[in-house]
Length: 205
Image 1 (cartoon, rainbow, N blue to C red):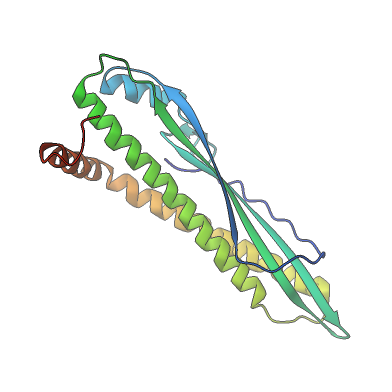
Image 2: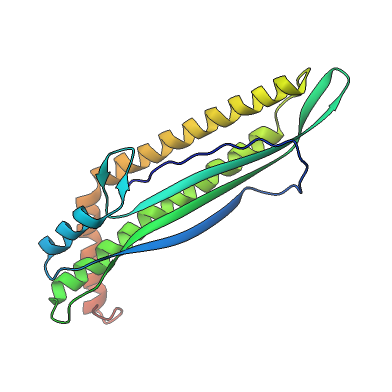
C-alpha cells in the first residue's frame, strides 16, 4: 500500500498565470481472481504493483510527480521569485477482483471491506502529496530576494528539496502507522459492515 515516489523538478524562467497548487489524478486497475481469502492474498502478492522503495509488491500504490515552475523578476542588485506554480501528478493503482459466481458471502464481505480500505489508504497518500504541493508553492512565493537570479534559483532549489524530503518523511510515517494498525482496523471495519447489514442499512456484497 505504499507508493513509489517519482519526484521531478522543473524550473523555468517563463511567466505563467498564478494559481494554487494543482492536482492531476488518474486511476489504474489490475485484475485479480480467486475464490478464497488465501487465493486473493496470493493474487495480490503476485500481481500487485511493485514499489521501488521497498522492492516488493503491494495491494495498491500511488505514483507521484511534483512539477515546480518558477518565474523570476529582477532589478539592479536584486532578483526574486515573481511566481511559482506546483503541479502534483498522481496515479492511483488499485486492485479489481473478478469475483467468481460461487464466491462465498464471507469472502465477498471481506473483499468489499479490504478494497475500500486500500482505496482510502491510497487517497490519503494523494491528500498528503497535494498538501505538500501547496506548502511548497507558498514557501517559494514567500521566499526573500537574492542579489542575483542565480542565487534566487539556488534558493528555490533548496526550498524544493527540503519540502520534498518532508513530504517523503510524512508519507513513510503514514505507512508505518497504517501498517501497525492494519489488523485491528480491518476487523473493526468488518464488524461495522456486518452490523449495517444486520440492521438493513447495507446490502450484502
